Image (tube, rainbow, N blue to C red; front, top):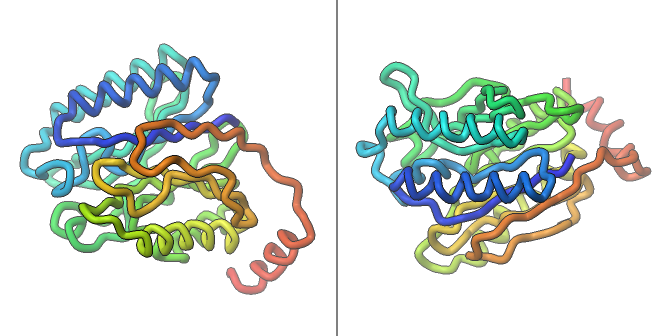
Length: 256
């Protein structure tokens, strides 16, 4: 499966963000990509850093999602986009997955909430695991990466890889924070013998990478910090090596 992740600077302007997203989807289709994923709240901007929660309109979100659905169906490509999701009077920080026919294949709502998330969103409960063309893919959102338990769920469900959608930026350069979050992503990959792919916003200085880490924790590719761009990775289920087998066998003892 060829996977693309596209990093860009989202704002509070849904129309502007949608133009970036649709451009990337069309570009991904031309490159033969099977699944393209975008960062946390890419469609609406992450509040309050990139947008204001009170100004995010449900109808505007719905209209934009219909356009993404139409493009996904017309170009026959899987699309995972970060957005705010409205359910009655509740709001969720979500990733919505569209299939090749444009239908919604699944939704993952962020589980680990803190700071602004607590003020703005409800806590999610969905597993966030979807079978896409023979590959079992889990989705997680930003602060989720701090909690190994949320990735153990994916391991227990035999996920082949996880896509982590982030909006983790700062007005000031914070190299240590960048390295800490990168280390979390690497650890989640190694612990769970699972490829981990991350995609982050470029609105301010990135404090987490857009990158691909294989199931042994090696950095396969990493996007240039602050540059709008797409990473393209041809994922294949790996052969189980000696070291991988050791982690798998011991996980049987530790995960009930």
